[in-house]
Image 1 (cartoon, rainbow, N blue to C red):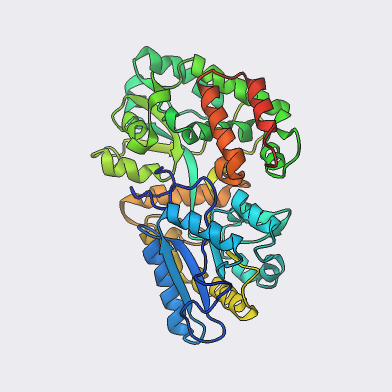
Image 2: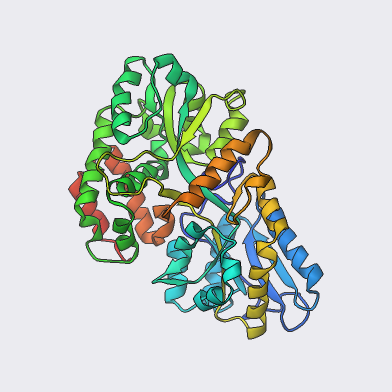
Length: 439
């Protein structure tokens, strides 16, 4: 999957619907090659764009704290997920556990594997205040914070081809009603209203995430995430599912969308070549289109916006979905000295100016506030807009397949594919999903 990398074509940090984390080399061993009783360890993902900036943070810390060194170890994505699963199961956890928050973090909390950081963050309000508030949602379980938001935010947006809109003589949609009105106008010109990589499943999911939020607000999925039995039976879900199937029936997506694969960037190509007018996709798509679309982005052909409101919907139109951050937790099995090192690392190095500048240089929007002044060059407008969406969101919901457990996420993706292929009814979809709540 290429959806987890931003302004790059790297897929290293992108795969993982389940939440990955980082681990330690020995059984409960927080020495990890460092020196002093406060030495700590940290596993994470290898490769561009993230590894150089994770390594740089450890290097800055170690230079300033030679008696409490942090030893990072980096793994490719699949190996990393297996390694951390094994380490946690054997009580060989790292000092710091890296991941995507949500369902994976919740499983760690339920197993007593990570520290409750709520009181610590309350006592260090100045640290918490440096981080975008919307990033804390995926770090929170049962009202308590178990992870520090780090690195970057990646909202999903609605992209559109300005040249195609000019060609057809229409304006970008301001409401969902406008979207419905645009569908027959583009189809009449032989242009797909929306590009969609339907075979990849998670791309379809972005439509459900936004449409449920705009229709009913964030409460419905919050109940699903909380494990409330029957939560998918909310009437707003049936309404949303019906709307989605109506889009399919109205030919809102390109012919053969169910065979289009995201990993080949075929959906992106339909947009920048003018064969499709719009596309709902993550902020990382900007970099793909810039790299592959010739002069499309440079010449101002790409437009973007937050997903528009649904007429009469209860959802706040400032809300967004996607990746509200990446996350670091502290192992409950670490020594008191190592835990203290981790907390100092969180409150100094990971919120300093070099950290912020590094993630901007990587092509991302940092979870740290005040990065706007660092957005310069050709990408400045896009980066500022993504930062504004993330900062202005009253709710920044995590992608459903990351928020849920791996078991529930797989059933979710399978049923979403069937929904778009008209192979299940909305009620069957609800019944199937209610069956895996809490699993």
